[in-house]
Image (cartoon, rainbow, N blue to C red; front, side, top):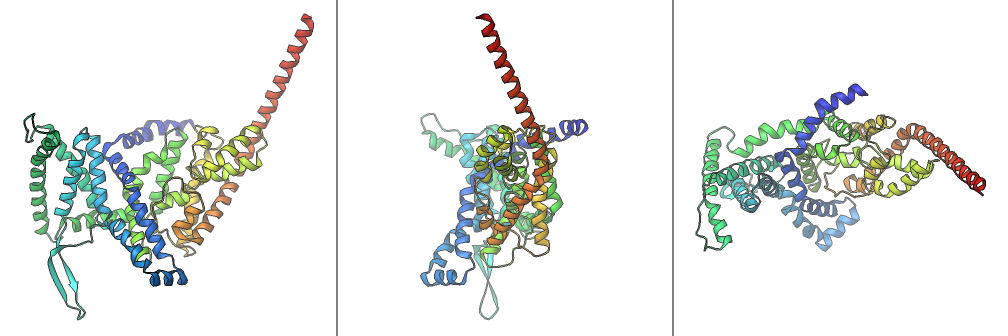
Length: 451
């Protein structure tokens, strides 16, 4: 254990802290958190319109609710790249020290995102002939497929924008001009320079076989990231890193969240789009695999432990902690258990704490491989969504049942380790009670002797 601790402290911890403190990664993470209400809206309305019950679908068609419910997803998840580029640019501008310019930077980033979109779409007639429409923007890259470009623009534009302002290349207005007007003029020069740069970039890509920048980015980055995201080994490695960091007292999920979001949220949105269209879900692993399976009951597969503490503990320490922490753990909030036991540097619970989340992911993944269950729909749910309800929303009754089975597996996994810890705690409590009793008897004896 000392060797492992030394390796983690010397090699893993510096990397983890650099990721946590990296302004670019944290800007991406904060950006995704900022647009959570938008992704949730799209996901919930998609869920309402896509539940596959014959009577329900008939009801939606008769009442025209199917059409009404479809509006929201078209302007939320189907245009998610627009919100990503604005949110990431806004947060990065703040982190670069230009809070007052955050809105202007985000707005210019959005303009440049549109600038790089290819012009013209093809409309297929009933005869099969495809008619080109030049004065139109393709919506192909407004959704999940354009998120990679949105992330890149959301990072590059604020860097250049803030660099221009830092060098004083702005239009300065007299002091008598209202601040709002002065700020608008101050952003003109950076916007002009950035627009010129990106116009040249667009023209350059139009001269290549890719045709446009979006197609290039998606071909170069989209494919490899999807391959990485659909690899169970990369997902397991992120789980291990998160749990090791938790063991040493650092919020592991917060460290790996930017990576999880960057790689797996696009895959989630692709699945959600396919679910909305009634198509087969293409991606085997999504961002929601962490919350639905690996993080069931909080980091460390702790719901099973909380149940054991609440209902089987013999020691007062674990019994009271379990009854207090169980409701929070059921809602995915693990801090009461992690810091109440505590889990930090706790060698007794080290094995289930590290292995538990991996088992929680591997079991449903294998069920997917053998076509017992489907992959997840990619619905973005907020922290605090309770277990079982989480599973039902992500995949209906089959995923709810899988979560119930995983809770039983958690209990079995934690049982031998918890029994040993509970037995030790009970012995310590009895020893403490004995010492207190002896002290009380000594006090009584001393009082009688004084009388």
